[in-house]
Amino acid sequence: MSLGEPYLKNNLDTRVELPEFYDVMYSHMYENASGKTPMLLFIGYDGCRADMLTAVADNTIHGMKTGVARVRMGGTLLLGKAGGKNKGDQPPVTAPGWTAIFTGTWSDVNKVYKNKDAKSPDVNTLFYKLNESGIAATFAYSWANYHNHIYTDEYAAKPYMFCFGNDDDATVNSMLTAISGGMRAVFGILEYTDKAGHMNGFNPKNANYKKAFQKAELAADKLINAVFARPTYEEEDWMIIIASDHGGYFNGHESHNLPTTTTFFAVNKKI
Image (cartoon, rainbow, N blue to C red; front, top):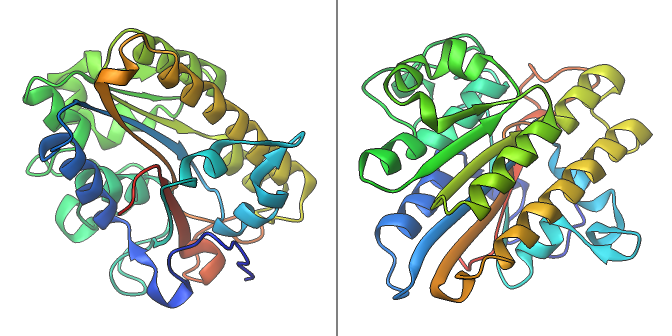
């Protein structure tokens, strides 16, 4: 697995565990000393291998910097580690990956080991905590497992947080509406790369997987532009994040190898 991305702040030996990224978001929203209103945009690229960051030269499409490149400019780009604290602790699959990031805990605490496991009611996602404390937050997605299985307790308590749509276009539109509508924290998961990986292979050299990554990057561009277009942008302190939950190998992502367990976390702040 080759990672020649020159902007990385760590390497394969010093990957950051997924739950640690929760702390970055929590601190920004609750311990913010900027004097401005803390705001958060989280864009998840499901099933995006970290070496996709070098598959598109300098993260450009048609000569323009997009998505991850825009976020990490002046910010931080880190490699993350999925699959649990120790090898084999939990499978490197979607529900455990995002739940580790959203709750700041591994599966031994949040109880999400598989894609249809219900989260422990003793652990809550950040978007739920934000709403509980009066900070409007929303979660957009196109995978029904989030409300049908994983976060059922939170869905039952606060269904208005969840924005379910038929596809990634619907997810992006929901997020755009939330940004322009004044939501303080907007979370969304894009499935482009995961779907392409399962169908065509999780491989940076695969044309379809690469195209899926580019679609995600262009979607992220729209969302970032929407943030900058807010009339109150100068009064707000936006943390913008693009991250992945797991990688992949051949057509799956169950094995605990580097291409599968290595993720990335791009944020527009120095951390």
